[in-house]
Image: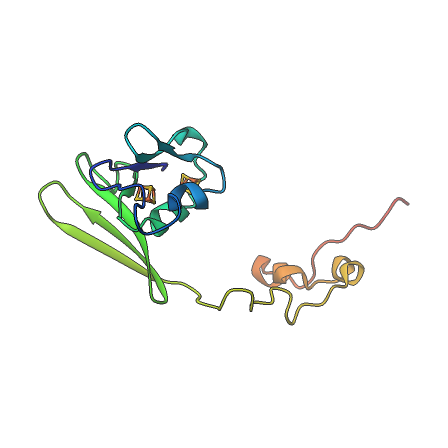
Length: 151
Ligand code: SF4
Ligand code: SF4
C-alpha cells in the first residue's frame, strides 16, 4: 500500500520547516519535490516500503495510503496518524462516512529502550536446551527432538 500526495493540500511545508518533511523523513528517498509545481510526490511508489513515516509527519495531512480495496473501496481514502499513545487509521468513504481504528503503541522516550534487558546471551546453552521460545510447550511434547550426531 504505497503512498500518494494530494496536491490540493500539499504546500511544500512552506513557512513551517526548512524543507519538505516527507523528503527529509523517507528512508528510501522516494519522496521528492516537484520544483515547478512546488508539491511533494512519491516518485517510485513500487519501491515504497510502507513505513508511513511521511504520512504521519506531513503537517498538511496531504499524504495518503493507497489502501487495498477490501477495506478502502473506490473513492475512499485512508490515513494513519500518530496520536498520544497510539495510532489512528481513518477511512473516509465517498458517501461521507468516516471510520476510525485506533491502536495503542508503546511510547517509550526516544533512546531509553533496552531491547536486551533481562535476556541472557548464552547461545550454546540455548541451543542445547529446551528453552527456545517454549517450543516443547506449544508443540505439546515434553522434550524436543535433538540431534544425536553420527553413530
Ligand atoms: S510533508 Fe506534506 S506538505 Fe510537506 S511537502 Fe510533503 S506532502 Fe507536502
Ligand atoms: S511510506 Fe515510508 S517508504 Fe513510503 S514514501 Fe513514505 S516514508 Fe517513503
